[in-house]
Image (tube, rainbow, N blue to C red; front, side, top):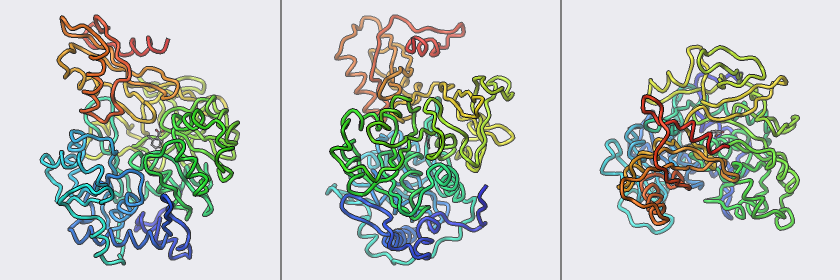
Length: 521
Ligand code: 3SK
């Protein structure tokens, strides 16, 4: 396991070290037709860090960073970390109700937001107990009376001494949806952010300064944060950011920025294949050397098709927000068997346990995955979830059913709980149920994942209507819109089946397993 000094700061490691060691002219970020060298990135981070400090942000304070994949998001996260704060990137589709819970739970003091995403913050503001400052990056002429990102940057000092953080001090916080209850804040230290690069990236991708990482996972998704921030910057390589990238935008970025490590989720790779089956004839994709996939299991068909059309291996991997990045994967130069996720990433160990007894199972037997390594589950203020998701001897239980084959490869079977994983988004069924039930026409509802070729799963709602209501297409749309307007829109039920009753256990619990099995048959 890599050893880290007691005093370490992730922003210094990812930016300043490269400048000090003569890599200041390397391109750190490509964005549209602009580039930011490491030296330029350092200046922006230092200015932003000083601006935040001047506003009163102190070591340990949580700062919400709410941006699409743009350079300001990287600058702000690193600036927060450099002054000893905790960056809290927020998914851009979150609605006011979800945002206010997260911001209050984290007791964030500051929100830095892209102007197009300001509205939800403003809607949430009356409920926000701890926020003292909102900083707005004015890019689309949205009217506001908060601090201006550009003005703050311009007037701030361009040199900043990093706060003397220690390796276990918190640097990053990401909220994750579980199956029940509210989202949980998974916290990560300066050491654990670096550890994701020094394990998975170092051994499975083997990045060099010449690499350009690019793709479309959002930065507030732990997977995107690693792929597009930590990994490229750890190795003095470049990241290519594309805001709201369509498949065509991604291929254009491959051509224009020379992306060598293409990062997405299976849905993203399938969209590239279906929209651009002859992409390599339309775009120069010769810079590509490997693809990274996570968020949902990659099928062997997608792996084979992508290899045939685009000539690269896609490395499937499984990670969690709690573990911060991937802990099972093949390595780019290994013997890839696309019917399995791969091997434990060097630095991590995995075992399969009996869900009831916790006993380790034999190879070939299917059971609950347990994982242990340099990153692990640590929740903000949720001791009960901490106990549920970990064992006393430090194993984390992500909630997936796996088999370890005789050759050591781990093969994914299913989720062990009610979480629906659709296009890489984690959607807790019970949360969607609660919102559908708010609709006056609905009497009861059960939400499960239904297999879907492109999205992995979609949200499906089995719905019992109140007496006297007749189901029709208009009602379907109305219920769907109600969910879209209440929760992040990706959580809406793409399919609604009206039914007379729901299957229940003797004690009255809905038997979601039965509905899931029905969908799978
Ligand atoms: O979904 C995954 O497999 C994943 C991978 C890396 C980091 C975070 C997550 C949730």
